[in-house]
Image 1 (cartoon, rainbow, N blue to C red):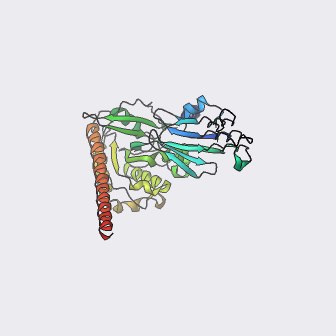
Image 2: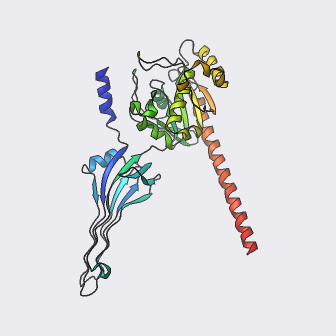
Length: 372
C-alpha cells in the first residue's frame, strides 16, 4: 500500500497546474543629449494563449523560469529614435489565471490567441529623463491552470470515471483496481455523428474533506470551476475508501459529493448537473437503484438518517439521472445523448438571453435618439 502511494505521488508530479515565473521588461536605450535623440523603449513580456501548450513544457524548456525582454536600441547619429527592444512571448495553455506574488489575480487567458502584458519595457532615455534609460518592469507571477471543458466528471475514487471516459471518448486513461486511479486530470472528446465534439474532463477522485485540501482536494476541485456542466458519477453499490473509513451508500455518496462542492465553492452547485449511476451490472443493482431513486425524489425524508456534518445546505437538482454500466456498456449511448441535449439546451438559453439583451439595448438607444 505504501509502495503504491509513492508511485502515485511520483506520477502526479508529471502534471503541473501551477508555475512560478520571473518576468522582466527590457531596459530602454540611451538617449543622445547633443542631438536630443530618444532611446528605444525596452521590449515587453507577453503571455500568449496557444493550444497544445502546457505548463510542463514551459518548465522543461525554460528550467530557470526567467523571461526577460530585449533592451531598447540607443539613440545615435544614424537613428536619433532608437528601435524598441524585442518583445518576449511566452506561450501558455488556455485556461490560465495570472496571479501576482501576493496571490491577487491580475489577468487571465481563456481562449487561443489571447494576450496578457506580463511586464512592460522601460522608457528610452529622453529629455524628460536626462537622456538616461529607465529599467523595465520586473515581478514574480504565478500561472494557475484551470482546465476548460464542457463537462467535468466528479466522483469518489473507483466510481468508474476513468472507465466512463474511455467508453464515451477516444481517451485512454490508466485504469486499475485501487483508489485514486486518476491522479491527474484527463481530457477526452465525445464525437457525435454530426461531427459535434464535446470536451470531457475526468477529475481525480475526491475524498471526504477535499474542501479542506485533504487528498490534494483544492488542486482537483479548482478544475471543476471552468467546466460548463457537472456529471457526477456514483457507484450504485456504495463507497468505502478504506477499512478505516465509514461505508457510504449511493445516496450518501451523492450528498457527500454535493457537500464537498458546496464547501469549496457554493457557486459550483449552480452549474447544470447530470448524475450517472454506475456498475448496474452488479448483483442487487436494480433494487439499490429503486431505493436510490426514492431517496433522490424526496431527500428531505431521509436526511435524519445521516450525520449533520454530511448534509449539504442545498441539494443538486439533476437534469437527468442515467443508470449505466461501463463494464457492459449499458446506458452509455443514452448518457452521451443526455450530455448533448443538456449542453444544447443551455446554449440555446444563453443565446435567448443574449438576444433579449440586444433587443433591450436597441430599444433603449432608439428611445434616447427620439428624445434627442
